[in-house]
Amino acid sequence: MDATPVQAYARVRLDPVVGAAIADAYMAAPPSEERAFAAYAAFCRETVWQYHFMVGRIEFGGLGVTVRVVDEDPYEEVDSMVDDVRHRQLKVWASAASGNPHPYLSDGENDMFRAVHDVFGHAGSGRGFDRHGEEAAWLKHSSMYSPLARRALATETRGQNCAQIFHYRGGRFPAQKAVLLPRLFSDPRPVRVVRARVAKAVPC
Image (cartoon, rainbow, N blue to C red; front, side):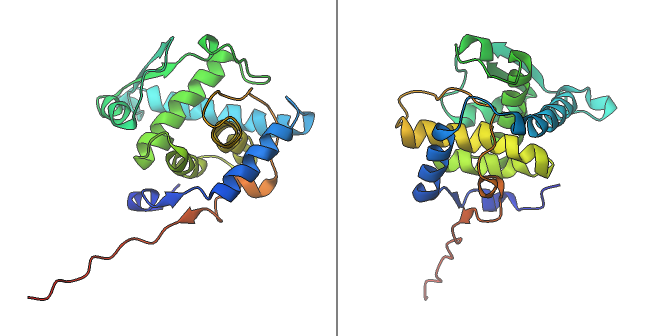
């Protein structure tokens, strides 16, 4: 499990050079590749387990979150999503409504992933949907996946987000893919965390 203090996620930053390199790798990759399927199979299994833990009844050890799939983006900023999660509810933008099918995941599996990523990634880190917030959410959520599944997670989060931000300049969402990015891009260890600012004492 993740032992990183929550405060550290507030200091996560995505280096634009790294982000552009991830975007280039994602855009250069084919729509799918057979060598990625084992990672995606592990990713699906672990995502489904996380989802059932998230929606499971509290008396049986679950978190008791009610998920509702909707046809439009339900959250413009993270605070309203976090507030919903505090009240054990979450709205998820339906994968089927996007017109951007996934080559490996079913719409249901994709919806499950969006739900658990919002709860365990964004709400868990307290970070939003800009490039730094997406980096923090990926870093937080990656601690819940095995090393194999983490390869697919990097494609689904870092790959897609960096392609949207650095290739399309936020203008559109890239086509979804089932590929493996270079292994370095799924490794959380090089992630940039800026130093905490230390307030200077004011002399009396």
